[in-house]
Amino acid sequence: MNYWLKILLSSCAGLLTIFAVIVLSDLQFWDRYLHAYKFHTFVENPFPTIERLNPQETVRGAQQARLITRAKETERTIKQESLQAAVRFAEDSNSTSLIVYHDGKIQLEKYWHGANDRRPVYSFSMHKGVVALLIGIAIADGDIGSLDDPIAKYLTEWANDSRAQITIRHALQMNSGLEPMSFPNNPFSKHVKRQIGTNLAAIALSFRLQDEPGTVFRYNGVNPTLLVMVLEQATGKRYANYLSEKFWQPLGNHDAAVWLDREGGLARGATSLFAVPMDWIRIGEMLLNNGRTANRQIVPNDWIQQMKTPSTTNPRYGLLTWIGIDYAEERTLDAFKGFAAISEKPFVAKDVFYFDGLGGQRVYVIPSRKLIIVRTGVLAREWQDTQLPNILLAGVLESTVD
Image 1 (cartoon, rainbow, N blue to C red):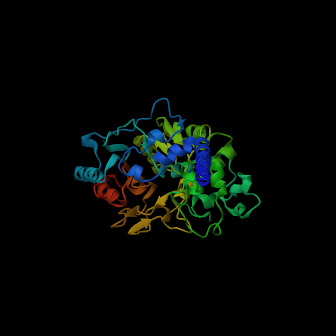
Image 2: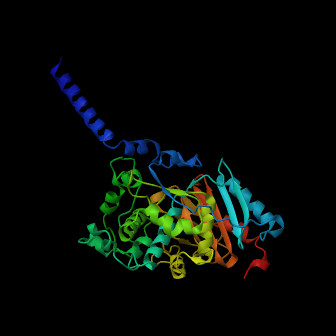
Image 3: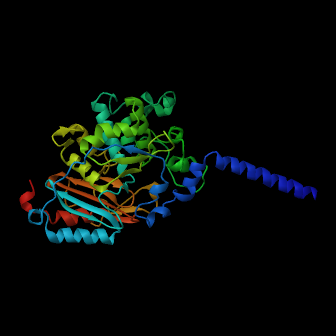
């Protein structure tokens, strides 16, 4: 055989061997990369790749889910034409669920695309708001010292470098100063491994400091990931267990699940809390009632107030929570090019705050009107952020407004 051909074949065999070793050493990562990484896999599927987002860890709910009263037709406190307009908007925006709660009762509950009241949905970044609530509980219980504790107090890997100045507040306000996240195609990039890798803690800790903490708003999924790590370190409990004990069961929710990086590994706090839509209504009700559910204070009232207080670096953002007071025609995030929240008009109510998941997953809470709206659905490239709340606000009967 020709000498150079032997060299070529030998080199190809060596490269194939190296490639095989890389793939076989982390089959779970490569399966995710091929089937669950890119956003295009989500756009047409209302229940995107949940079957491939494994392993999952159960978040135990109450033995029996707490019922919320449903308004009879004669008891509705939102005009029928507004409810019908909201349904049309939901259908036109490819929704999987729309639930409207007002003045203590469910006014509307609709499902599409095979969704129902027991099928979990992909929450995307609405999970971030839950992480913020758990931080507030941990501070109230004394497991975390304060909002201004350095993250390095709990994650000592950062104790001796410039990241030691990043506080829990910075992570909650998305102004930690860490380098931005991105979504490249390169499977060896730490940004891809942050999304679907099997050692999420190591990747999160590898992000470098780019700006002085507290000076620049930069939406970054590394921040809630670090906060999940802080919670586990501070409480000595797995995230799913802590979430269940301190929040999910007291709310009276159904069983839920979180996506782990690997078996026994870290929950992804930036996304991937799988829960039925009605459980998000119970969260909204707790927020509406300043941290109380069924006469029990689950989250301190002052923490709820801090969550919806504008940060110094973004007037539309509090503690992993969006705020509707500062009008913007278009809200975009650098990391999610091609997706935007569009607001043709400001929110009618000035006290709207909400959990925001990519492409129109929402929990809107409007205390002045006793209104909660949950919408989930297929990802919308341009989500009309104020339209659904304004449709429903226009129908709230004046006799029910304080």
